[in-house]
Amino acid sequence: MQFAELKWNNQQPYSLDFDDVYYSVDNGLAETDHVFIHHNQLIERFKQLVTLASGSPTFTIIETGFGTGLNFFCAVQHFLAHAPANASLQFISTECAPLTLADFTKANQHWLVFNKMVSELANTYSQLTDGLNKLSCCDGRIKLDLWIGDINQTFPQIQTAADAWFLDGFAPSKNGDMWSENLFQEIARLSQTNTTFSTFTSAGQVKRNLQAAGFKVSKVKGFGRKREMLSGAYL
Ligand SMILES: C[S@@+](CC[C@H](N)C(=O)[O-])C[C@H]1O[C@@H](n2cnc3c(N)ncnc32)[C@H](O)[C@@H]1O
Image (tube, rainbow, N blue to C red):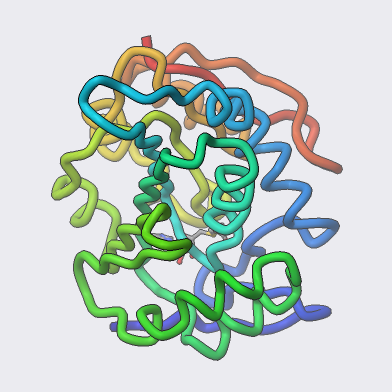
């Protein structure tokens, strides 16, 4: 397995492999809240989860690019705060170059609010192997399927549809594999009517690929210095 090559700027990770930041250097947590939590309407949707005749409700988020896990931890924190106690969260993510355990721990030390979850996951995170890794925390209410490998190889193996997508590769100009037309066909295969998505980028090619794959796409206000971003739903 190939680990991510990083440098650190003010305790924030920077990818030497892709020459890009993992998240906004101004405030990564606030960016995740704005781009991924707010624009997938997650707090409202978590509150509305209701017990089904078939059993406890599960909400599924699929992410492109696990990185430091910031988006995962942030989604979990909101889920625990707002979803009914019998509901569970299935978070599926994929990563071609995971952070080493030391880098994963260092990156997340920055966010004190996640420290307990990070320690809970550290043991299984340290044993990641290529392919599917099944992690869980918070008394089994949170399940993390972390696929290690190139997204174009791992995504075709996923069989669970998403309720919401976090589209979070590096910038499209630096990370073409994460934003290809083929990948959006996979994203469509794993979507159902009203599956939502959001992404920090407003690149025209990403917008067109999402539309061609069957999504209604809106340009909305981006986080901080980013003027625009994309969000929407599968029709
Ligand atoms: C912007 S970062 C993700 C940030 C992350 N969501 C977080 O919360 O920290 C993009 C991630 O996508 C991963 N990535 C890039 N190309 C990939 C590919 N072809 N397959 C799988 N992962 C890839 C990178 O290694 C990086 O960790």
